[in-house]
Image (cartoon, rainbow, N blue to C red; front, side):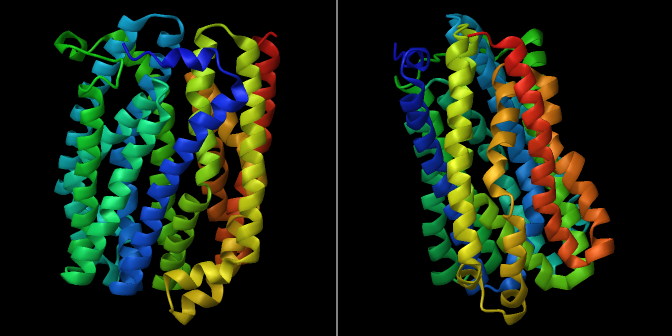
Amino acid sequence: MNNKSAALGTEPIGSLLIKQAVPASIGILVMSLNILVDTIFVGNWIGSIAIAAINVVLPVSFFIAALGMAIGIGGSSIISRSLGANNKERALKTFGNQITLTLLLSTAMVVLGLVYINELIPAFGGKGEIFEPAKIYYRIVLYGVPLLALCMMGNNVIRAEGKPKFAMIAMIIPSVGNLILDYILINLLDMGMAGAAWATTISYGLCFGYVLYFFLSNKSELKISWPHFGLDLPILKEMSALGFVTLSRQAVVSVTYLLMNNILFNLGGVSAVAAYGIIGRMLMFALFPVLGVTQGFLPIAGYNYGAHKFPRVRESINKAILYAGGLGLLIFAVIMIFPEAIVSVFTSDPDILSETPHYMRWVFAATPVIAIQLIGSAYFQAIGKAVPALLLTLTRQGFFFIPLIFILPHYFGELGVWISFPAADILSTIVTGYFLNREIRKTIKD
């Protein structure tokens, strides 16, 4: 048996966190670079309208893919704790249930998404000249989303086994594939929006092929059989409760895109939506090391909590916040110094170039403190406490950001939308820090 998961409970936390976080960061970096370069290709080869069109479609495809991510993270928390407690049968049953649930839910959502295509696109801001290119992109990408959901689920399980390098490769393959296909289908074959969409969908298939290979080979210690695919109610309830945290976060992200696209379209037209498309891509890209530390932290905290090694749990929290906070400070400095150069890579449109750098500075203004919010909410998810994990996950965008984007524009116009980003970051960090500290004092005894 390839039992590397035991290392999560024995190796020094600092080196273990680096081993887990670096591959996760590289995977997120490549995936983010894929989104970033994809946006650059689309903006330069098709036009700024195409950037806005893709930005409109993202909430729908992200939400369906988030089903797989939610099931993956929720189930992986059970798997990590089960492996830590040496209960392998429960880990196997959980994995089988993850596969079954991901297939059922993602397929159903795709069918609904295609049936209501003409209603969903305008609802998410695909109005006027944005509608037709968004519809082309949306229909093709949706076909591949079930494969993406399975990839997102499988990737988290791979990481829960303590094999972050394989999880990294699973993220790199579709990203590199998408960029190569972008060049071929958009630039060489001049397929426009359809080319961009097919490049994305085919890349999902490449990712799925690799994840399937990992679990069918001897690289995984989770060797499931047909009985494991049968749905188990207690496991489903725990997995759903924990996965609902991730799904809620992604649902709020989708709602945020919907609201932002509509609010910005009303305040600044197509150029404002395109500006958000650029800034949104930078948020995905620039925060890759912070998100990598968060992903690396999850299996370490979950395994050691399941093994009742509480001093190691406390140490993992402290070091994860320290590492992620330092990286956040570095990202903050780069964005504050070079916003004009960053925006100019995406477009030469003078309307977008004139305002977007200023807005980007506002969006990233509170980056140095977000580590506390990310690690804090992830900790509750890792140890299986679904309710506080859910509430803390929703604090930033659900409880603070969405109300702020309705309130602040009344006083500051379009600028109020961008000011809402750092305001929500600071408020959610204060709340999360308080509850994380209380939980540590109450339950983790050295």
